[in-house]
Length: 138
Image (tube, rainbow, N blue to C red; front, top):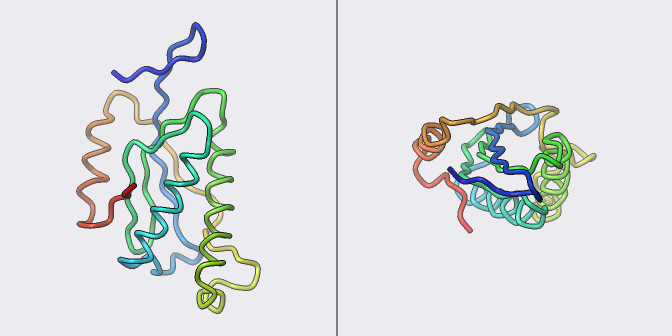
């Protein structure tokens, strides 16, 4: 078991999180999917204490297993990820603005989150087996 530590407290908080582009548009193709994965990976690395356990991008959704320390709220982490990745992607791809709107809202409102718990290996396998070449890479 991979337990982290915050002073005298041990923790291992892993969440399975799924979110989609606005209107569930199928814009996350091969190259743009890898770019989205790279942007998300970079943002998570900058977030103190957070790390991606497993991640993947399908044509119409993003799935990650994310380890988040208990002092950080999942909603704060997701708000930061979605907000900053949308801005970065809209700056890199001005041609997407005609499809996603002027306000640069790339992601749909909301997301799905569940705690992984002790079946982390099963969830990691599920994410890894979704589509070939859709996994996040460093």
